[in-house]
Image (tube, rainbow, N blue to C red):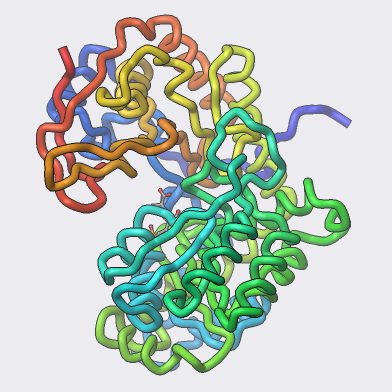
Length: 457
Ligand code: F0G
């Protein structure tokens, strides 16, 4: 059997990418106020800013788009999607939204109130922001290994059950529900084990609290369980996903990830408890319940994508992609969140820039350097994303300084990854010349998207 795990697809339609010079990129980045979010995508060579909504759709999905029915109410597209979602999740109620954060906003507004606490392994930035916007305390309780980039653990996304229980005991009446994010994006795209999902669900239920899962990358999580958790090796990713969902009472989904589509999301609810309020808010903010925030054609593309995202050959190649780049970083002596996650590689910027003070945002600085050196756009997951400027002008910092290189699905091939490893090697070799940054303009929330920066002299 040949060793190379190939991309399990061939290319039918291509998009050229544009090579620019180092000097041009330096200029583009300065025009972008040293914030890669402000770059024009056509000035980026490898766009690894996010795996969200950026992947390539299959021929079957494009065919499904032609089948999309745009009826305002009761379109067959909705029922086709509902059948697939019911098969995977076992949950009765599907509420389509335009993307994950709309699902969060609607569910949280329906089920939480100010002064409450919502525990999670780690809240993603929009999840945290949506809760905080409602005056809810978003509490991260991932296991300690999940915050140590170099520590190897098969399920670094697991929630710390002892801390969850202590919180339920101490503050139970303030907790409307518990959450689990699969995979744990903020902590490195790390999976949660079936044992942990089950135990978390049982613990919450013992205290009368529902489990809401944030399931953007549920298929990648299912594949990690298959590869790493004893007893699951002979089950299909679909069967594993079904079991994962069986422990949850509700879920929010950004379909832009494992739904394999460019836009879309949904809420699923097992029971009727939050249904009425959720539907009302859906109609108010998104649309009628059988289309939510989407076109009929989007619902059909998603119905096909959800199944394709669970294909075992695809998932094997998908997880291998990140692992492959991880092996190259290891050979270069560069630290990263280990083992590599499902959708991305998270470089530990402190291992490239050990002497840069955190006040100069080393992960942001590394992100800029990757763009200047090789046209690669990643995203900082560090103290710009998760730190805050307090009213007294002081700053809080994040526990890790990471640069996430997130891989759009079915889009880049092995030579793109070989090229990226060469760029990263060059950045490391010239690390002493990398400049830190300071923030010159920032909004109050989700500051990484729009802040403006200047070089530190
Ligand atoms: N939850 C998680 C774990 C996510 O990673 C995201 C999005 C969302 C919720 C929100 O979904 O974007 O459809 O509104 N993550 C993207 C990323 C943006 O780059 O990781 P959305």
